[in-house]
Structure formats: C-alpha cells, structure tokens
Length: 294
Image 1 (cartoon, rainbow, N blue to C red):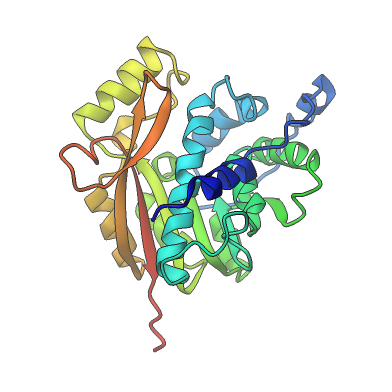
Image 2: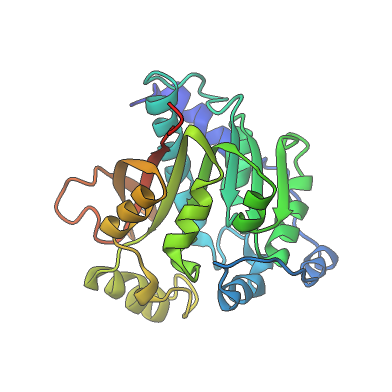
C-alpha cells in the first residue's frame, strides 16, 4: 500500500515529537533513579537492569538508542499498513489518524518511542514496561506534549495486565522478545491481551551467523552503534520459532517482513521477506488473534 507524497509527509510529521520539546534537566533525569517492583514469570531481571541504567538516554536521538530512533518510522509504517490491510478494508483511513478509535498496547515500551508515535496517529495507547526507570522517563517526556492525552504509561508486566483482564485491539511487542526469559510463554501471555480478531506484532532478530556478525561483532564491538552486551545471540528467535509460538498461542501469522539497515544512508527499510537474505537479521511479524467462539 502506498500513500501519496502529501500523505506520507503528514504521516512522518505526526509521528515525530514537536520541535519545541525542552531538554530534560538534571533534576528530571535524577527522578528516573527511583525503582519499583513488578511481578512476572517472563521478565529477565538482568535485562531490566541493563536498560534501566540507560533510561535517561531514551530520547537522545544520537545516544544509545539512536538505531531505534531511526527504525521507529519503519515499525510504525508496518503496523499502520497491516492495520489498513486487515482491519480497514485495504486502505489507510486517514493519513493523520490511521489508528483512530483503536486501543493499542505497547508492551516493553522502554522510553516510549513507539508509544508516542502511535498516540500521535490517533490511537489510545497504554505503554507498559517492567522497568520503573524506563516508565518514569517516558512519562517525563510525554508530559512535554499536551497533545498526548490518549497516552498512558504503566509500570506493569504482561502477566499483570492479563490478571487485570485487559484487552486491546492491537498489541505491539517490538524489540523485546529476545530479552525475556521464556519467549514461548511471553508470546502466549501477550496473545491473551488481544481481542478476538485483533492484531499482534512482534519484531526481533533472527538467530543466524549473519546476525551475529552484524548485530554483535560489528554493531556492538567494532562500530559501537549500541553498547556491548545489548544482545545475546543465543536468545535471538528464528522466524519459524516465532510462527510456532504464535500458532500455539491461538494466533494466525499473516506476514513476516525483513527490516534492513543501510549504514551509508543510515536508514532502515522494509523487505518483502521473500527475497534471498530478507530475513537473515531483523524482521517483524504481524498476526491475527483467532476468534474461537465462532
């Protein structure tokens, strides 16, 4: 699905933070040092501690999360186009508010990069994270934009949301499943948060020699695009494993697309998933929650 250039510009403008955002002060940065406890069977405490230490960096576009800042428009565009294809008859309903009327969960939201983008495009968003420092930083950043009234952050796990009987039209679990203890169980829990016929999205990294070379040896140790230790190659998920997890969780996998980074242009782009090497590294999956009551 392609938008006209005017619609494309509107889309990009809407997912970006306003230009009048003020820098975070030292006092506000210090607030993220307060920790809370969050119950979960899938949370890896060492991973939470790792990302909490970098909480104040979430909204620095040239800091530790620069690659996520650059990837975010591609992730949002994929979700938007899949929603249009599967829930809106094949056409993006509105360039400025394609998620109007939808309730979306961003699980493992970190500092809120995806959450804010989805809220700016019309969704009612719950950003959830097991790291209290991450949530605090996300809240501090969102307060600066009065337009984000439909965005709520919670220091909570997926398991706790299930216990609270929460349900969403869409669940996004992007760049998180490779950081949990039990990815199969995490997928099952996340699927319980999706309404029947709703959509669920996962993005992660394939466990291949290519991904080890580029995401760990090059990105972490040689080029230092991300801090060393950010990833554990053994915890990467293959597309076949991801599809199996979703099927077991009563979800129907619909699409798997690669996400490729060009170090020269410093831009990410979607790949069809059908080409040679398309799924060797980063990829994103869209699935539908089955309605077993019909």
